Length: 88
Figure 1 (cartoon, rainbow, N blue to C red):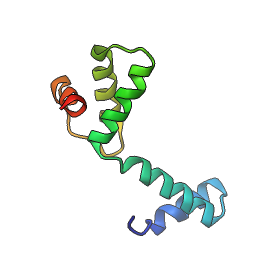
Figure 2 (cartoon, one colour; figure 1 turned 90 degrees about the horizontal axis):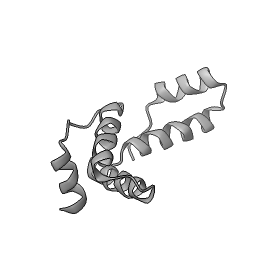
Figure 3 (cartoon, helix red, strand yellow; figure 1 turned 60 degrees about the horizontal axis):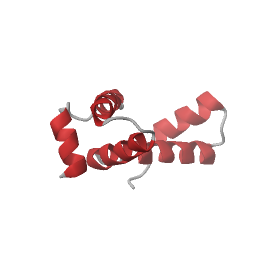
Figure 4 (cartoon, helix red, strand yellow; figure 1 turned 135 degrees about the horizontal axis):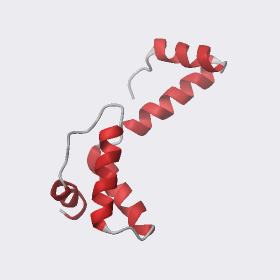
């Protein structure tokens, strides 16, 4: 992973009162979470929602909304594109 944005680490430390080392770990964890490729995210969320007995029609809407809400939003994907990521 690339070097952490120092300004962001300082901001998190200052706004939370966390020591700089802990703030750096938090920033690293968050950046790592959002670095997950779109295809991997779609497949993972599909598995998680299927385990909760959600139907695919519902899953595609949920996943599309989640992707749109991410800090760096993924491109708008149709249900067909989402299905193809999961099933090929």
